[in-house]
Image (cartoon, rainbow, N blue to C red; front, side, top):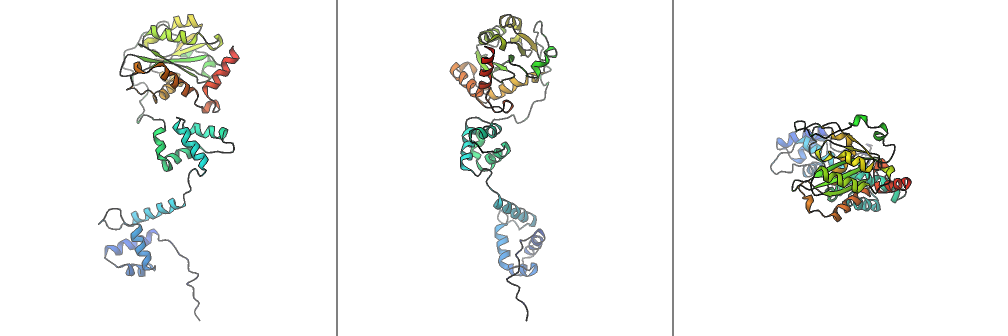
Length: 332
């Protein structure tokens, strides 16, 4: 007596070779039953294959490689788990991203605020782009194409008297081993002659912002001396500038604040990379098209607070404000 093996027969998904045969026979106007006999499948399998993996455009013939790609992609998507399954963590990520946190900062702070939770910044990026696309607009923007360093070499050189170049700056400043070493720069807008003075403490990453009516050496000097004179003297050691004409009165600044000034090499603004990165963060709030003259001091202080209270990876996910307050207390 012949054994019935129908109950033990295993089902196999169609493979690429099967789809090649299906495509060939469909091109010869074969019926579903004829194709099923040829590849030893049930005719409903052929009907289901044509329905699921047919081209998206009508009147386009069945193509084996396209159909196979669709089938593989569908299988992968069916087995994919949500990038972030816990609803509490999903809500936390959404809340922090909307507050301006980067995925890396969210990944660092979530362990502090939700004990026992852990999620990588890469997982957060995938969660946003594949499952919460409404959050993409809250991510920090980047330039589509990065400018080459030294792209401004044809600009007229500006004379700043008695500069001491960055090569002579003490190594302790570069290594960020102590507080009190600052970087200074200005941020301009296209709409007016007003500028934003930015000073940045290298070790704590703390920012101070001040609006200048004009980008002049006198305005720059007054902004620096008035803003920094209230700090403990131990937190006023060095200031690193670029070669802009607004820094021409650096010697007067040094006399008032008892600091020592150093200058980046011409066209090497990345030598004070901390403040360059900080200005990039400020641009999220004040794009170049914004008229800085129309931004009131209250709004500038709000931006300053927001950036200083954003956790930083290099600070162990503490905020610059917290680290700087600690430095002030130690220096007092």
